[in-house]
Structures are given as C-alpha cells and as structure tokens.
Image 1: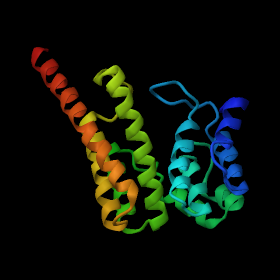
Image 2: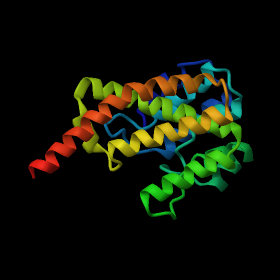
Image 3: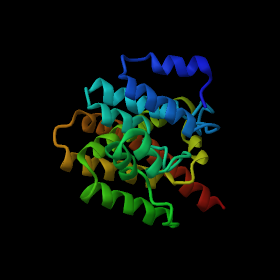
Length: 212
C-alpha cells in the first residue's frame, strides 16, 4: 500500500474523474503489502502508470478504471464479483479479460491461454488496457536493464526469451485488433530496445551452461 503522501501524489497527477480516483484507492487497497520486483516501490506505481497512459490518450472513464485495477484480480485481493459491485460490470469484465487463469498451472500454457482470450474474446477496451500494461512494464524493464544490466533477469521466474515472446505476441494482437492505436508504436519501440538486452542475457546463459 502506498503511503499517504505517495497516494495523494498519484491522485493529483492528472485531473482524474471521481470514479477513477475511487478506483485508484481501491487498487491501492487491493495491492497492500505488494512491491515492484526491481525497486521495492509500492506496487501501485505500476497500475498508476497504466492509468496515466490511458488518461493521456483520452480513453473512457471505465477504461481508465479498468487500467488502474487491471492487476487486482490476478495479483491483488479482489475478484470479479466484488469489482462488479464496486465499479460496474463493464470494468469488472475488462479486469477479468486481462487476468491470467490461476487454474492453469503450467506457466507457458497459462500465457498462451491469456493471449488466445485477448486475441479472440476480450473487449477492445481490454486490449487497450493490455497494451498500456505492457508498455508501462517493458519501459520500466528497459530502463533498469540500461542502468543495471541483464543480471536483473534473475528477479523474474520467466526467462528473458519468453518475456520477449510475450511482449511480441501482445503487440501482434493489439496491431490486429486496434490498428493505428498509438500505444502499439510505443510498445514496438520498447520491444526493439529490449531485444538486444535479451540476446545478451541469453548469450550469457549459453556461455554459463557450456562452462558448467
């Protein structure tokens, strides 16, 4: 959970609608005790980053709400029914659309199921949220790779090449379902910055395996 000053800062970063501010507070509650892997910052900084991307593009209020709440089912304390009561069925459905299925225990199969749903069944507004989510995550990742090098990949359970595949697949879906959406270009740019870092990390892994 963000401290009071941090939460007030997030609430004041943009001229958010009152319903969006309520969603920010709800997301902060849902992610209480959670932190970002690479910085130790309160987890809410990531949903807040996703929200800012959507707000700056002038997306609808429910989409902004879904953006800041996007991880509250998969990673937080909430469920679809609670979100429906608090924010309405449209927001609840968007958050569900961008949440991985916890009953699929195999990591790669779980990722593939998420992508299949995003490709064929998710609401277009949910695809916007997924796009913004990936832009915020990969931008942060590239920044830390530039500052700290590929050793940061040890903080993640997903190998670097699978992370690259993940971002590329989401981009393919977004480009097909949301042609000319501006976040597609931003995601593509970050993927191209990410790619050589992944190649370096995988090269190190290969050398390490040979030596061992």
